[in-house]
Length: 300
Ligand SMILES: [Zn+2]
Ligand SMILES: [Zn+2]
Image (cartoon, rainbow, N blue to C red):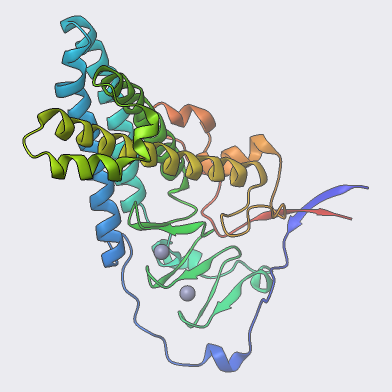
């Protein structure tokens, strides 16, 4: 069996000329936060990140480390939090909409017209792998999914930032979880107490003024939020690794139509510097194309 590369014939491709002639619907610009779910998601996200950053630095660590240890911990977590927040900001503000392309790129090149497909909502032809997002109210180049926690669609131009945002969010929450387990141990809170929180709340209610129970209760809440803050981005990151491996998208991650091999897939998603982009979101790493031209792997 021989493998060849060629531009893919996309599913459900060109619709009739009648559709092309209907009236265009005015489009909203991308980039800004687009829904209440986005506002809630991004606000919750930033609040949780900042809470754990400050809580560990100024409440937990002084109970366990000397000044030098606290300084080292502070510098490491500051670097992690910088990577989380800057990747989050760039993911939220970098557009992957078809509208963001230069006007001449919003038309298929000669001979590639059959690869583009018609979006009924935008009332226009859009490139392969572009799909409409109802929240963004736009077609997104290589749309992965809409993420309420970054307030934007993850697509061709900002997937790099989303991958490293979820990676650093999981690492940062993991460091906080380690710190908070030390705190829990100091105050005699066991892992099992997480599932008996109701009993603790009841005891605190029945015994007002018992300060130790209040601390107990607070630690249980912090641990529960912290475990969620580790698991959620970790699952997102693992899902992204699966899509990078196959150059697929989240809603169809097992699709291997565009899988050109792990190295090429990395360059298509992270840019020319590939894994070096993990070091900082400011590292320049141009993508190999503008998101309109996709090679597929097809067995013949
Ligand atoms: Zn559309
Ligand atoms: Zn969207």
